[in-house]
Every structure is written in C-alpha cells, then in structure tokens.
Length: 346
Image 1 (tube, rainbow, N blue to C red):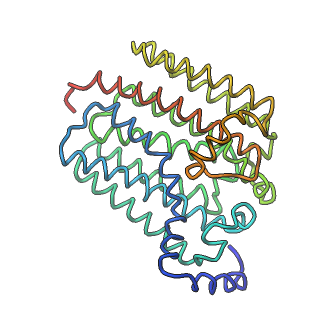
Image 2 (image 1 turned 45 degrees about the vertical axis):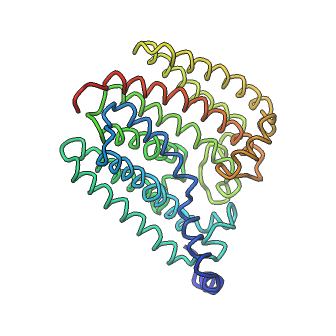
Image 3 (image 1 turned 180 degrees about the horizontal axis):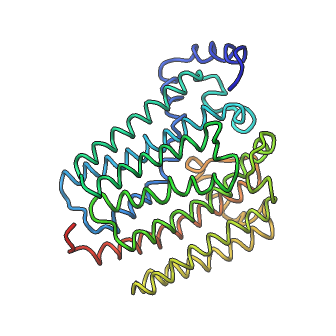
C-alpha cells in the first residue's frame, strides 16, 4: 500500500475528471478484454453438455453464467489485482486507472467489492434455480474462483509472487471451473468434461507463463518469481511450448479414443502448425513469426493489447494463432461430446 502523501497527491487528479470519464475508468479497471478469456470455456462446456434447450429459461441461465464469470468474476479478479498491485503498476502499467490518478484507491476498492458481490449473487441465483448437485457445483466453482482471485493478488498470500502458484491459480479460475460450471448448467457433468476442463487448465497455464513477459522488469524489481525472471525468455518459451504441445497431443489422443475422427485431423494439423511457429520463436524470441505482425496489430491489437517488450509481442503473435487453432479444435471436440449425449436426459 502506498503512503499517505502519495495518495493525497493522486486524489485531486481523480476528482477533476468528468462523470463519463470516471465511468470509463471503472470499466477499464474491470478490464473487459479479459472477460473474453473465459467465454470460449463456457461455450465449450455448454456444448459438451448436449443439454441446453431453446427456451427462455435456458437462455437466461446462459446469460447469467456468462455475466457471473465474465464482467463480475473476471472483472473482480482484474480490479482487485490493480488495487493490490498499485506499486508494480507504477512501473509496468502507469496508465492504468489508479496509478494514473483517474480513480482513487477507495474507488478502486469499491469497484472490486461491487463486482465480487454481483458474482456471488449470480452464483446463488443459479444455484437456487438449478438446485441439487449441479447447482452446488456451479456455486462452489464461482466461490472458489473468487477466493483464488483474491489470494492471487492480496498480501500476505500473493499467489502471483511465484509462478508455481500463479499459473495454476489462473488455470483453475479461467480454464477449469468455467468449463465444469457450464457443463453442469444443463446436464450432469460428463466424464469427457473432466478431461476437457483439465486440458483448458493446462493451456491457460502455458499462456499465463508467457504473459509474464510484459511485466518482467517490474516483477524483478518487486521480487516476484515469474518464470521469465528465473530462467530467461527463451527457456520460458520452451517450457510453455512443451505444455501447449502436450495439450494438443492429449486432445488428439482423446479424439481418437472417443471416435471423433474429423476433430482428430484438426487437432493434429493445429499441433503441426504450432510446432512450425514455435521453432521460429525459439530461434528468435524477440522477432519470431513477424509475418503476422501487421495482422495482429490491425486485427487483434485492441483485444490483446500492445507491449514495449519484444518477447511479449512475440507471445501475442503466437497467442493469436495458437488460440484460433486450439479453440477451433476444442470447440469441435466439445460439440461432438454434446452430440453424443444429445438425447440423454439431464
């Protein structure tokens, strides 16, 4: 936490901005772009259930779970992270709402509390509507994700201080419980869902490892043990790529054993293309796969952001292509699982 005098210097700057700018700052604190990270997991979980019906009730439930894990749950995780990471953000991201003075610390804290309460309310409403084991799974999932989000940023826990705790925390909250909850929303949890949720977990772990490139300088200064700080950029790429390739490999094996032959081909093609990209980045961690640089900046720049760290820019280029390859294969497999259970009562 910053000392009193520093806080008093920032508060007048925040007070001078207009109402619309203040609302925009609160929305920015919730970081809407990050909400997108959990939506494919939710969509895949619903698809794998094979149980959603074209009824108003089911559409409302779908909307509720997207809001619960998106603007409220993920928004809380981003807001509370900014609140506790003020000192680091002065180095890594000084334009964020609180360090830039557009919001005071109290306003930032209020933002996170409101998002937290809305996520909890959504969880209880869904539990009340669905009930039973499925409803309890969803409620426990969102509550545990919120707890992990708090522990991730808040002292003295600060799971983000060490990659051995930070990456699993993100994988659990963004990749695992989202898929399981969405699957439970319309059906009993399928055995295949456990496998797919686990693969989501490991893919999220692999990508969050690389996302730490952007804050390497601040992490080193603040004593955070990110993988980049401990083993360097090229080795960090290597560790992440091994995890990514294992995820594709296991997904291919599962597709084969489940009899999903078309998805199997998609997964293997995705793995092959990824290997080609990964070799280029390992050869040149700063400028690898630069042929997609313009497409990333013009087509996806607003969604994934930009960075002054060259290794992070290389990751962003890889992330765009990898995510497309993985999501196409993953959603196809999830859809095939859903078709398998389409006529099974839930």
